Image (cartoon, rainbow over all chains, first blue to last red; front, side):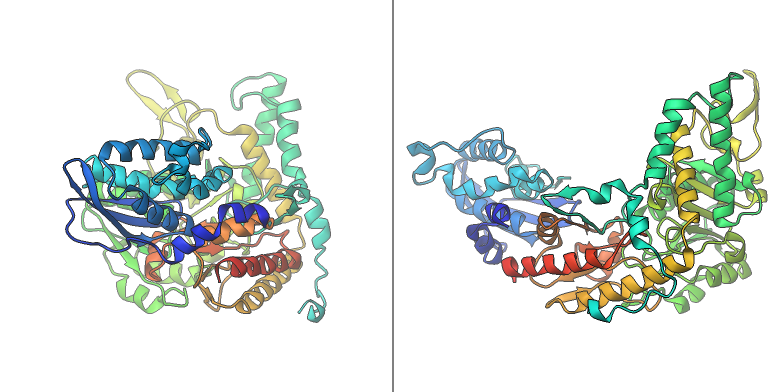
Length: 156
Length: 415
């Protein structure tokens, strides 16, 4: 059970039960759908991007605790960031949950806006079958930002 | 509950059955393994593992080709499996058995030969709402190619097939009914004998998908009255990549070949090829030799079981599991038909199936979570996925108890 508490930390359970930025909030100018056929998770991401900056980002859908928490934490993390910053955070996040990179102890990571807030999701690296749950929202947002919104992102 | 365990009338020796499966002694995540995922694929008894090892160690060469010793040994062992399948399903003749790579391959074979050759625009193929994707998609592909109609017979909310709807949808346009013997997602046992009778009266052929049925039900294709029966070796304690199609000899005779190549011909010139007789006509290329021999060993193992005892054991275990799961707060069974076997699909109102699956796994309990390749079934209940514990011949009360205890951990975390 102690290992599982690494995966299902209180923060994750809290975000999954009370997701932030949940529900389609107008105005938006980007959106994309994501689907994980393995577990049936489906979600939709909406974003308002102006002058290269993510002014707002919301999501709706249904899924497991990991995917809901990840989507919720992602919206908190990315709101107000530039698209270039979002790209880099996405890259780092992916590397962290797949075990390729660690979150550092320096000020850039630990400080306000640092990636450390996402550390709780790093537990999925021990559950390869669940990595897709954690990354679904991120892939979907990336698709929305890349203006491929008409496509459905599929992770399997 | 355990104290009230009834006397095992047929004295089914579950310990002896379990002893045949080396993997059941494995510890997973440091826990006793409660393997409740046999509907996805059954574990293999040592007899099957040994048959495959024996083949590659002592008797392996290509079949139907050389005159040398090893080729002859392999050919004899390989060919002998056809009679085992014939006996298993009580087919009239062993030449009515075509080896395939599994149920999916078998259904595609029927769609691409019988289907393509005989169905035309306006003809109907009737499937049920509870079919596995492998008994939907091949017919959809044929529909898009030939302009046939795919008609769906719904099931009732308890998971039983709506036979009134079946009768109503059956018409002179129906050319084929493709139905599963047992639903992999719900466990429902369909009245296939009655379906065959009604379909034949309407002039339609019937394909029965036996993937989930054959490990649990006595299957007699002649008594059933089906025209095509398909199943996979890996759900019947044999290796993956094996399976069979049974069809009446006259149907196989009339069906054109599908894949072309070696082993399915009588003679080849650039101008013309004479095809071999069934079943070889449908078995192009070097087959899965050791796999088929392994499937045969699985059938031998299965047929040697005390079936009266196995039936009683599985029935009692399903009842016990259903009763124990009913005690779990917030649990809803998906599929409660009176006539069902081996599957206990459910959802919890406070946790997603995938999270449940991960927590059960940490407790050593292996279950399938997801849509079980039966998305229309999920749609019927407006859910994305279920948790699906399923039983095999080696399943026991301890597995169920371990599952229910692990569900307590799920409640601790998510409830």
